[in-house]
Length: 438
Image (cartoon, rainbow, N blue to C red; front, side, top):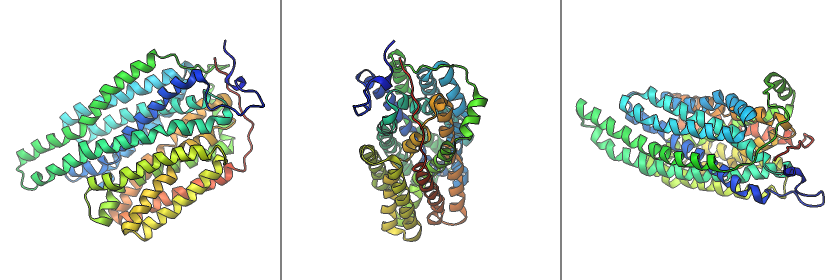
């Protein structure tokens, strides 16, 4: 049996981010963060795309894509944590990747049906896999090194998520939206038979990137399955679900973190989903141009600031950084709502820099001191992704009855809640929980 990770450094040394034997497993786990970033950001632009493909589909109805996507995160988080508890994180990661792959391949029969609902089912299965993957990957990263550096380590792993986000956005812009826009002119004078053929072309454009990703994920699954990964020892493999939940709900730091995570994910998904509504509305450009010239730079900024934030947290407590970014995000959102135009567009891009550190930082702060409750606790923090499922249709409804600018009051409220949690987290003192590994 190897020595515990917590014993890897003496009390006189600064805790390491990772030990040498865990570097390659950490890289493999971090790649998963990129894969779900691709899925998330390919999905966001499809809210607008499906309104053009399926006749009569409103913004609210099309936003049910996000309801199915993030609703699956909510529904599968607890099963994902049970898998982790009974069979280990590696098994959970493989189950999650497997469902993600199946969801990608379900886009093919969905296109054959030429109906909106089968796509919702495909998105649900895909996101169910992502939920199980995140429930296992996030706490796994926290567990494979000293707890003192856990939040920094998770921020570093999450830094690969924006890389996937950029790739996903490029795929959506180049392989989906740009091609769909080229077909729009044909739809105006098309006969009923031609309209049916055109829809088939449009849906083929939509599903092609997902099929390609599914094929690649098969190779990723095999690589992880064949790699020896760190194993986290549990003193008790029984789920003890009821007792764990009772402890968690009596932990105010954890409960507030779940609430903050709900509003963070709501903010991220609403800001990114409706960028290709807001920018064309304010600047009179196409959706693909908005993706290329504004949303893509926002994601690059998001990725860059995650690396920057990880470095800053080496000197400044994470809750102070979170507090600052949440307040800045609220200010930029106010500019989006009240000023608009090019200034509002740049403010919308700047919001992504503010959001960069929020998910992993809230996850890390909320997981402090949970010990062996971390697996079930982690599922609660993933279930909070329900915010994306509920708040995105809410903002879509506001767009239908009011305007895109006014709808950004939704993320504004979210940033206020996140700032409140950051202030609270800074006042909470929790004992460090040791995690033994072999």
